[in-house]
Length: 172
Image (cartoon, rainbow, N blue to C red):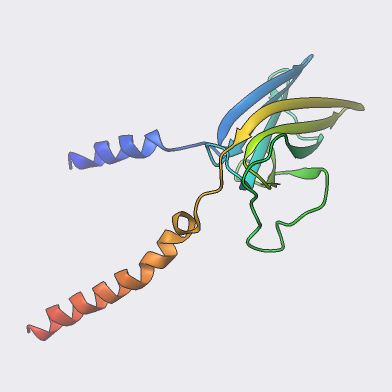
């Protein structure tokens, strides 16, 4: 029973909110935008970018938000694993409720290369258009083995489970 609190504490160290890690904040008078990204650290590949908009401390649910990533250097190129992430659009529209949190505007943004880049956010709210830019750096994409190891580990685990089952049942 003493191990349960330890496991809870270890799990809390790596826990993130619905939007990932806070990348920056921008204020436009009474309107505040908090920008989150996942995975952390930021990597080339599909990236979940989220924005929490607040006006006078209350969430804003009637805005139009879009994202744009511009690579500023020449880093390692990332190629999408499927054609659904390949996009020639300049701006990616964010949807309210795309993530588990219904108060956050978010979208999957393809970051196509590692290295320095700029995340541009455009917010249209109450007839005004607001812009924010954040200079960020994207790490190289993880190797394929790091992304797919749970799937690759299933077969040896299934075989080991079957062998263990057979050994236990044959002894009887």
